[in-house]
Image (tube, rainbow, N blue to C red):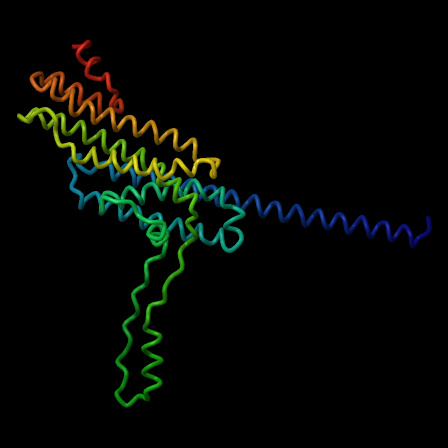
Length: 300
């Protein structure tokens, strides 16, 4: 082998080595970025869970105003995380790391839709969910007064600069993430319904008819049934949806059983305050099993 051939072979080896060094650098950067995104997504998930727990404190001795004030603080903390996450998922990187971001977004949407429901007694649209991820518009700085002798074009330029610029959202809310958040919301609605059952049963000890107020739990039940009716036809088109629908069915069953217990068992035990209190406690802790009253009676 002459010197020229040896040099050419060495050059090809160096080129391959340099190429693989480049691949290693690119993969290291990719893995590091994905780890940062996963960590931020987990932080969003944890803070969103805290937001949901705070919302469940409504009716537990704290006023709605106090709870909503605490929730707004957590929403502000979430925006800080979203701002950090935005820098990691710019452009095509959003779709590249969408599966890493999705769990945090769905948990946030679950909390946001729950917050929206408690405020408006309805579900937010996809557009409203997307609007919740738009950074707050900064207040324009107070500008000095413009002299009356200033030319007209200068006045128009000044007015144009004072117009607030519409901010872009931190990132896109996909239809899958929106549907996943709404599906997860049904679990929180079930807990809200069960809590209202326990409260209604306890309130009936004050001399009511044992049935309590059905409006809240019946409205929640209708909403969950509507969500189920809208999502069932979509199950063949989303691989992740059947599992969520299974959990949704369980939540709906607990709501219906809780309504049954509120109407029937509450009336049966209205003359027995101890059993009624035990039933209310079991409803709040166990999810409202239909045979809860019989079990209470057997253990009494």
